[in-house]
Amino acid sequence: MSRKTNLCLAAAATTAALLAGGCGGSAATGTARDAAAGAARKAQVKTAASASPTAGVRATTSPRTSAAPAAMPAAATDPGTLPQTHALPGDQDALFQAGAQDLWQAIVQDNPALARPFFFPLSAYEQVKAISDPAEDYQNRLIAWYGLDIQAAHDYLASSADNAQFVGMSVPEGDAQWIEPGAEYNKGSYYRVYGTRLNYEVDGHEASIGVFSLISWRGEWYVVHLGPSTRSAPQGFVYNAWS
Image 1 (cartoon, rainbow, N blue to C red):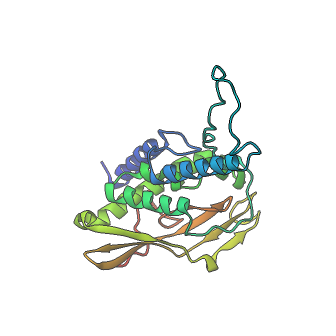
Image 2 (cartoon, one colour):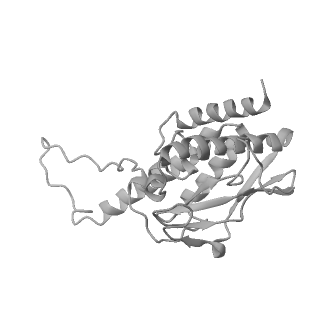
Image 3 (cartoon, rainbow, N blue to C red):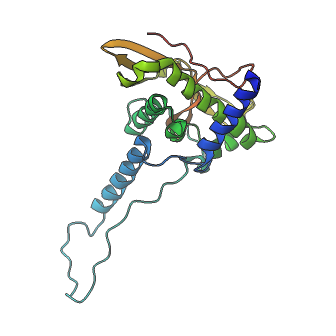
């Protein structure tokens, strides 16, 4: 079997694994980003409850009358189903840092599905792209490449993966550009930034892997290309790494 055939089969297998849990939202559960999103929803519910006119008022129901159940966090909403905003994301909020941690764990464990929640949502991609079949392009190109690039990064770490310690992800926010409709086959807009770094240490020695590009949706950064945005074959790349 040729190398090209092997790469194509690897891309197909990676796509299937990443899409097993659904294309629009998280395909993996129990990730740091899922936990951060859940904590944010709980905080919103708590804030809303404390702002209620009846907050802090002693209940006057009789012993045989059941009190209303406590408010539960709202179910997670696929952000891609909501309209875009012009909010410029940061790289210090809990949701972003949790997503970066998930990406790091995906690389260390050679498990691309862990980093799926940190990838630009399909539903948002369908709002943004003016192409004939954005879902097909998303699944067979973007997600497939994402998985292959994560696997390539895992191979790049090799035996040092066990000793490597995640430091953080840094985004050069000053370089972010607002991309208007009409550019990059778009019918919608987003912020795009190049030059993001995934930083780590191995035995106290600093190292880093480049992230080719992030784009924004509703004030949050998402990976859209971990490796280069164009390539001649469906193979993984470790972009602009240094150690």
